[in-house]
Length: 327
Ligand code: ADP
Ligand code: NA
Image (cartoon, rainbow, N blue to C red; front, side):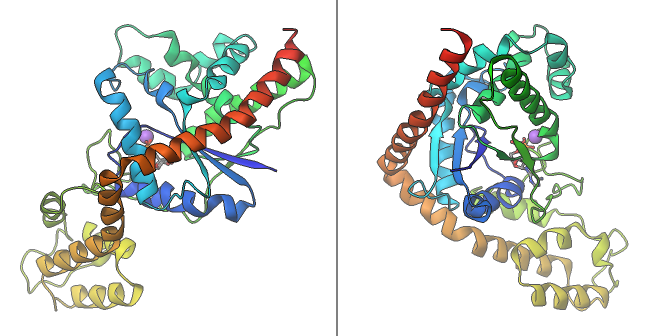
């Protein structure tokens, strides 16, 4: 059985960019690609950046990430959802890979350079991040990895590691290929910038407090030429209209665009509609999340079961690797 593997950062604060750009597609991805789907919450990766890692919060964030993804539709009975540190073979394989990866290749990674530039002292873990990532993928012999464009370079390194291992020790790993989902939108920020991102702080949360979401929507920039209600607007220049299609039906968007162009509706009224549609779209997720909070054992059992299934595969791979490297 071919496999697809996705890494999920351990954060409960998921924004609508993560949701629409990643999670929505995860839900269907395994089926669509005809592959067994594994979703790994990468808690060991979270240790590599001292600016983001807080030991008091890690377990809670990992639980939250599982909860939010399950609430958003990832069904732990259909997919293998698990926590990286529950399957110690990831770190074991990463050590093996460390020895066949040139330090120079790691130092050239742009994410490493960006993150290291912000630190006074750079831990070796930050440099090794893509090696652990290669192990996350290859321990399951996953051949397909859904990634954002910012992860292409890391995936290329995973391919090189697989190639090098196969050359040195015999054919073992497939070279995983990136899957860039053609249907996944890139959601802009509430400031109108090209990308919503938690590092920029220009986000709307998937489960954010409704009052706080309304405050953000209320302040979304409209077409700057539209100052009074009577001014006709250009929906293409309005940030409000960038978000509306994510939540409102197409016909509704078309009608509102037309009204906007002929100054038939005020900006605040459009924002109210956007907010209502956002709430309508996220309400089932909010309700499931609330239910999961009341029933945390559903999440924990799902993770335990996921780790058990993942570990079976990981242990078999690790046994093969040990034999091949001479242990
Ligand atoms: P952030 O940029 O907020 O730190 P991450 O890097 O943790 O988000 O991304 C998690 C997943 O969500 C990735 O698959 C990424 O491609 C996707 N993603 C993040 N931001 C957006 C966005 N604005 N639009 C679409 N997808 C996004
Ligand atoms: Na990012």
